[in-house]
Structures are given as C-alpha cells and as structure tokens.
Length: 392
Ligand code: TXA
Ligand code: MG
Image 1: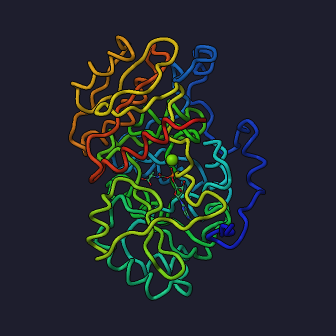
Image 2 (image 1 turned 120 degrees about the horizontal axis):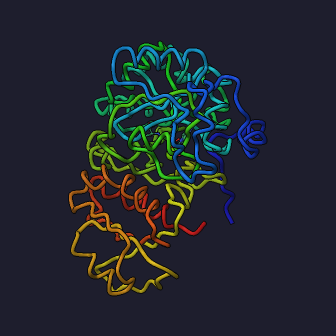
C-alpha cells in the first residue's frame, strides 16, 4: 500500500512525553492555595469541583488583565477567555511554561498547541519569529492574505514554524498553528504581555472544552494560577483549523466556529481534505475527543432508531425539543433533557455546557441527536458529537 507521510518530515519529540504520563508534579511555579484552610475544607476526592477553589478567579477589569499578564510573564498558567472556548494560556516563547501546559492538561506531547497573536499582521508574526517567512510559499502567502479579513476571529492557520516557537509547542513539527482571537480580554492580555501565548482548550486531555470560567476550575483547579473571568464564550466551539503547508493548498484540518462557507468565499476556492498522515495530523481529530465521562450514543431521530439502549437510565441532548418523545420510545423516561434549539449558532454556544450538565446528572448514559443542519456551525457540532460518542 502507499506509505503515509508525516507533514513535518520529523518525528514528534518524545522527551516531553515521559513526564506527561505520570501524575502531575507540583510545579514550583503554581501559586500555593491563597487560603490556608482551603485544602482542609475540600471534601475528600470530590468528583468535580472542590468546595473552595484553589485557583484564583480574576475579574474582567484592567486590574484583572494586568494580573493575568503578570502571571504569564513569570511563566505561570492562566485560564484565558476567547470567543470560542477558554484556553489554558502560557507565554509562547517560554519552553518551561509550554511544558507545564502539557502537564496540567495531561496532554500527550504529540498534540501541538495553537499560538495566539495580538494582531492580524503576517509580517509582525514573521518578525516576531512565530512564522518562518522564508519557508512561506507565494501561494501560501496569497491565501493567508485572502484570509486575513477573517482575523481577529475563530480561524486558525497552520504555517511554517518560526525560530522562536519552542519545538514542544508544535510537537516537533516544522509547522505552527496561529490565530488572532477576537475576545477583547484575550487581546488585552496578549497585548499587555507583549508576546504571543499558546492556549489549548482549558480542559483535561480528551474532555469537554470549557465555555465558562467555572468549567475551567472544574477541569483544572489547582493546576493553573488563575482564570480570567470573561463570562460565557460567544461562539462555544473551537476555532476552524486550515492548513496552508508546503505548496499553500488550503486544507480543512478541523471544522470549527468559523463557517467553512465563509472561508471558501474568502479564498475563492474549495477547502481540500487533509493529506493522509501516519500520526494524527491534527489530534483534535483523534476519534475520541471532547468526551463526557459517561457513554454517549448519537442517534438520528429522523431515521428509525437502531441503537441499543444501554443499561440504566438515559439523559437526552436534543436540538428540536420534539425529538424528546421519539427518544423516550426507545430509551425510556430521561433523567434530564437539554434542548439546544434548531438555530446552529445558538446550539453551538450551548453545546459543551449542556454536555457538561448531562455528564454531571444522575443518568447512566447520554443520548444525543444528530444536529439539524450540516451548514455553518452545524458542521462543527456534528464533528464534536461524533468524537464525543466515539468508542474509547
Ligand atoms: O478555538 C480554539 O482554537 C481554542 C481556543 C483556546 O483558542 N484552542 C484550541 O486548542 O482548540 P486545542 O489545543 O484544543 O487544539 C489544538 C489543535 C491540535 O489538537 C491540533 O489538532 C491542531 O490544533 N494543531 C496545532 N498545531 C498544529 C500543526 N502544526 N499542524 C496541524 N495541526 C495543528
Ligand atoms: Mg482541545
């Protein structure tokens, strides 16, 4: 058969990986609990949230932004609100801070991070050493320029890696994923830091992405210094990732919050599928990802339901509320129902929060219906639900 190729040409580095499998070492950099009683007042082995969070919440004020930037400047970890989901941010040029992102998330070293820039200037990113201008083909440059009007926004581009980005941040690949977030707090923090930040979604690896500051605490309390509270995220699913590697052909690596239609209109051409690679090219594309703890069954309410119910009681995630009765016929009375509505933008905004609530419900398993439309953000919703329901 044909030999799959790896996009970067180099094997991913393994030196970070060994440390990641073990339990989290108490980083010297993490801020100790602010209240001396906080440890004692925690219920033992609480499943999700400790009663008294050990991670500080910063207000969405000038002072909060200043404190947030100071944490990043000294190599700390920050929960950063963006328009898509909350990120776990670290100084992008500080290799130790980047390593601590992988540790806090228990993220495998082969899963590269997105570098977040303050402004939509390709030349500034090249000058800053984020993107390697010398390896940027003229076709890639032309396509970036066509896409620049979509920045700031939920679009991530994969381009040749510049010299200042630590290898661990890109998992040893010679490409780097970059985006310019639109959230005013994210931009203010990056601006105040005076350097780009890496920011994967602020959840433990493979789990549901956080769309509120409280979700970040649920996922990572005690593993980051602070979360800057920007309220609920406006879009609710992660950025769309487009690869512009080698010859500059635009390829869709991950559907997301920037509609494919909008990207194709800006490019004046269709996005191509990713090339076949040996390693997961974009590990957000791993089959099982964005997953609740409970088993999730994905069913199409329009076709007859051929899914076997699991043992115990179900909770439902539906778009059209009338689908509830259809599901009840197969799965029985639900413990809880979350209805996202048929508007794909609103459904995307509510998706991860609803999954999180159902996961915390008393249900034994979850049932979700397929999204109403495969247009706009419906593509990203379908992708996330498919991965959340994938066999683990
Ligand atoms: O909306 C978002 O993109 C959020 C917010 C916080 O900005 N961030 C986010 O990051 O979703 P994360 O770590 O959950 O997803 C990063 C994904 C990787 O899993 C991989 O799929 C892709 O970006 N990626 C990063 N660098 C890449 C590269 N050099 N080549 C291909 N894919 C890359
Ligand atoms: Mg993620």
